[in-house]
Length: 313
Image (cartoon, rainbow, N blue to C red):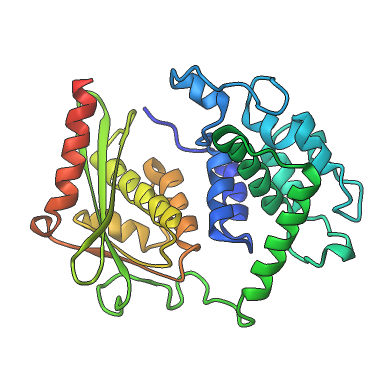
């Protein structure tokens, strides 16, 4: 039986999705703390045994190594960034470093009042990828300078009036008021004997033209309702990666739509529905609606196809 995330971790997830940073940074942080980043360690766990060492220093590449303990990364954290003596490399885990960074104040010359830690993490991750895939090396000082500039430009581009909080003109439960939104139909297929779920989602414009689609499989899925919830969570992550800001999620699981749009989180789905709730904060406008099964055939076909392929392997 799949275990949901411990409740104490919800403060970490909430801190990520409520952080005043770019959505792409929220997604990076979420992937890091969920162990979903394509680090050498995670690639090795999946049987992909090439490129599992750090390109900067040659040590085994874990998430904590990339962002905290690599000799290259340490040069970034020892730069003059915060007023008080704070060094993320001294933290035992990435989660600890991120939570600690929220209370530290940047030095005035940087010109950024928000938390710089996520922006620097993005710079570290991009530098790592440029080195691996394009053989482009970066200097620690350049990463600090570029990350600071990106943070400052993002902050200056933000509207002065606060965005409406979740639940106030941001989330709807009907199809009304969805003009200008990307439509996302999601569905899931579930096998009781194997507790495996196949998930599919498809993004379309209002005209009905398909612009993007995706699939995923999950083991240890204990119910069809959990499978449907995993499909929606995966679709939201895909939407954020694609840069969508206004989205309408359509599902043929009326019970799940009711759960998501309420304040009740069933124990079985607690971690997943909380993730969905926090992911929703990253969109300018989001709606969750119920549609009949006969109007969800494309997502259903994707879910069943990926389930069939997973079972055949």
